[in-house]
Image (cartoon, rainbow, N blue to C red; front, top):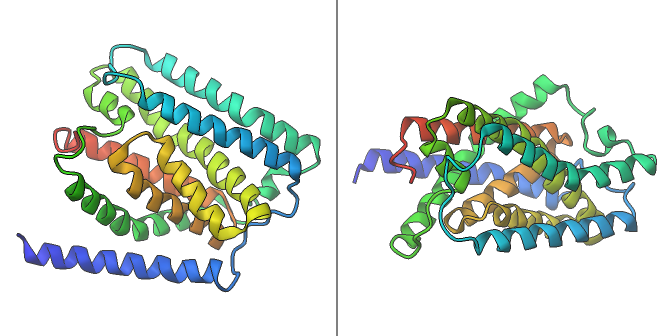
Length: 269
């Protein structure tokens, strides 16, 4: 064992945990959160309930599919179009409903709280602060599940690793670094968390949306690390009040994962 490396890793995890515990107390103990939910009504409860059932159904249906995905089974254009259509069907009715009721999406999601550049800086800082905690959790889960789970990395990672088509890889990069962070943050942090906070309180909303965020990625070994990551995204949203911040965190996290796949393809299987 490399003891100096292990000591540095433990120190970084401790700093990460202490930082996020402090932010957690600031938001959920002293009421310092900036996410406002007063504009939402029972209509949003209906939308949110339908959305949760859809996510859970799709996740469990995906778990029942047999065989790993094939990189040659679809083109990059098909992947992008299918993903955009799926998110449009999910987010379209919600955004239309908000607009019809006179609720400004920019204000609801805090897009006017911070300039984009400052939000990106916040996102980079908060993500790199969270990474030791996320990776530490991932390592613990990996060791505990060793030889107990035959599941590999997430399917999109497997496809990206195995693909030999530049166009397909570019499409996956666009999907992972642009489309998924925007769409998933609008759904999980922007809408579901805010609706649940309005009617069920902040802390249950934090836990529930983080569990749902882990579940939707349909990968058992990654469930706990993604739960932790989802919590850090929500805390970042509450601390800054801007959904741009977790979007930036999410995009950078996915980008780092893809870079790791390119650099160490055989270590991430």
